[in-house]
Image: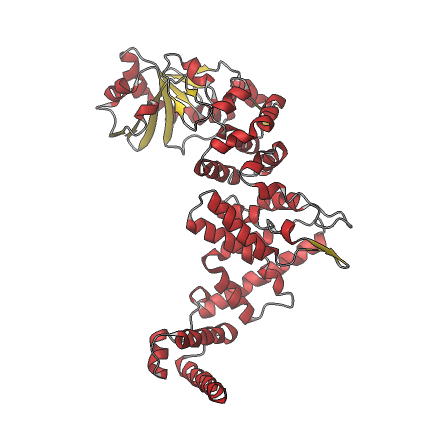
Length: 464
């Protein structure tokens, strides 16, 4: 009996498998689709299918010709032919028995005619399963189905061999620990601890992409602790483990790292807000001081924003990502500066400073409260609710997202008879401050205030 969730995939792949079979070749479903089938996950939304075959790439190209709507061959030297049919993408890879140079980041590709050899070179047993086509038969030489059922994370070969083949697999293990609730076996943990230095041969871009994948699983907590506890995080994000210090050694408050991981888990699984949660207190170890009032971390948001920028650049994040996350880190305490209530001016400044990142900043601020003190948590939630209500109220009146001075640079220059220069910029800064403090003034009042400001400046200049 074929499960209903598998039918869409089989219907799409059966005609292709029959083509391969008619030429004396076998075709297998591999990768996440097999794993997710066994987990009972919905597979109807995916339109990317990974397949493996004993046909070499040249034969694969011939077999998809006339069936595929389009074909791409960028991965041909690694054994992969890609094609599209009726809106679905297929990647068909010749069985591989890769051999890796220990000092290289890239495999030396060797093809195999046995699916078992191909599966042996995969990262984990839960991914080392295949489904023979067109009649689905499970191929599971390394016990991946049993490991899924037992919640166990293992490698098909010895972990030392698997991680030597591709050290990124050590980082990928964290995602499978967190995303699938798998417990790594002791020998896998020991191999990561012993081989963590091997991650140094992996490009920053691949590490960044794998970190991003970890950050958007429902709850990355277990994966983040795996990275810290094995020491792997020291090779690409050492700031994280350095947060393992008590916020208050007198009252034994939770350490900064525990708090950080809790905040990450509370935020919605969106990449930028999760990264901001990961970095938001990264400046605390450098700013920690103990005085009569206890522990303080003055300006940790400023130091943290700078550290965030440096680390994200090292991991080759885009300029937009670096700017966004470091800005959220810099602003994550801004909410707490308004303890006496939200004036209109304070709301305008908060919205203006957050810009397009306002939803992420509000989310981060809400989730930054991890206290078990229900009274404090309720008080913070009330204040956040008040802020969001005030933002909505002012937004309806003033179009907060587009706050600008009442006059533009051309109007200022024409009115004051100025050429472009510093005076014009300072005049616009003055008008923007008025707009933030008092709301819309109207052009007539803006010109009157500008005249008064300019007269005061000229008078001060004459007095000098």
